[in-house]
Image 1: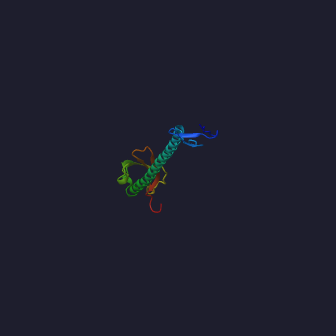
Image 2 (image 1 turned 30 degrees about the vertical axis):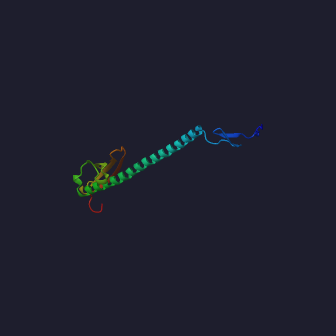
Image 3 (image 1 turned 90 degrees about the vertical axis):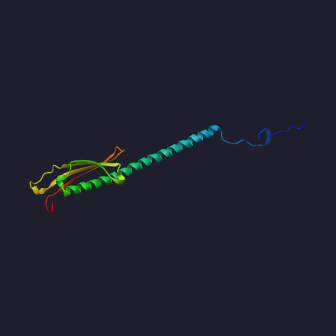
Length: 157
């Protein structure tokens, strides 16, 4: 009977009970290593998705701010035009909403007489302070524009 001797630095590898070869070592990942890598990968994905969500919210806020500013300037121009054409018939405050594509935006206008001194002539005209505020239905943020507007005053004033 012959005995099989193996060197001490090698081992016999078996697969299903039979000897495969000498000197092999089983390589692979343990279940713990796989779970740790999945946790790290999942954490990275969550961080990226939260950053994406934050950027989308910031984009929506800046879009609403841009639209609100443009709508406020439009409403301010209409009030200034009304002051030029019929200064005595302007309501001191009004409230409404925009039509068309911007029907989710609302506006308010406050018109008040400015306490600027005049020279005593009736021909000096009047100065009004106009404040226009625009906001979106579901947003608590408001955009306001104020201006002083002079009506009348004769030629060259």
